[in-house]
Image (cartoon, rainbow, N blue to C red):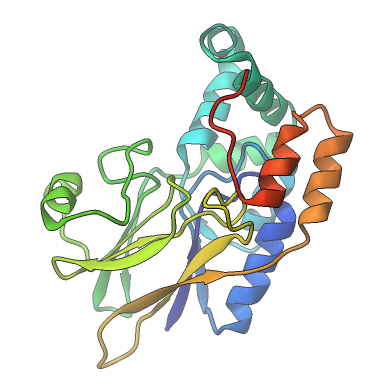
Length: 244
């Protein structure tokens, strides 16, 4: 069995379409999404619809949860966020149709599954501690133990940081999918992870970088009321950390 894990699509429909096509071409029999489906990109509803249509096993990310809360309490978020970040969140909320909202609301925070009747999968967005916690390539045995809070999966899948890696730590395969829609490491190619679950062989995984039509995302951002700087971020593979 080959499984594909992607995360942090962030409203980038062309990238998601390219990721699904690439993963299937590489033999992926099942595809999972570790959250942050919305935010920053100009296609939040369309991404939700495609994941639902393809029956992708998905969990909710911290940005998705924030959008759902902002729909209920916009004044609270408007008063507590920087104006630039609120503008993006407000735009995202306004462009989530009812079907997309129901899809996001129905997603769990964690997914557990036994792969090939042998390997225990734990999929979270940030870490088992919370959707806003982070797991970086420097994770140590000590650090991983603290984040697992007593769990012992064979494979731990996460996202959130947009920094992709696959690493074996204390016998556990740790997979950070990176971002399938909004890379931040200077490489504008999005990323996802392929994991091989083969009979009689140990688990193995690798990161896949892929190309997609970035110009479609940039043009759509320019036609919208989203900050123009987002188009540059998608083009360059960066994320502007400080927005006015």
